[in-house]
Length: 218
Image (cartoon, rainbow, N blue to C red):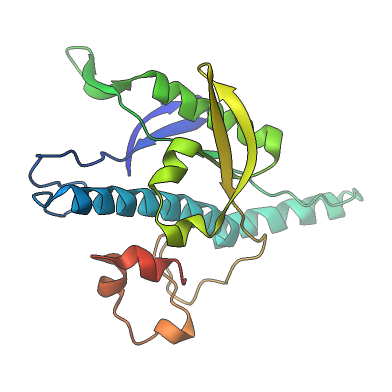
């Protein structure tokens, strides 16, 4: 995804969906010259990868050695001061939605950035804020859920139905365990950690083409 701007303690990240009749896409590195069926498949693949990237963000925050060292140090300080240690843990709230937006340059003579104006951006912000209410790290709108592949939908559960912009909208989440696999030696943030059954599969094959299918096994 493309990190566009920060909104207080949050960031707006976007993926550009391919459109019918548009050729080429630097965002996904794929040709978009095929038919409608292929277009729907590519949109579904981007939705899957957007979800996977957010799952990866949560996992990396939980396994980060730098964050864990800081948390351990905080506990040691409280113990040294004869205070009850608190299990500090950074939490993130992520919202995923799909819709149209107006792309426009906004700035000054010194700095101009692309900005995206749309009620759908506001819906994404609502989803992010609602993660605190529902106590989940991630919320997906029903519109976004509809784009996911069947493989991804199997791993998503519905949590509620709410009214957004005068329309009923289902809310979904991706359930994650609190424990994550420890990173191997030399791991860089964002790298794929392959399970034993995929040790012989090159990382390039997992990440490229129809790699989203492989990624659901990791």
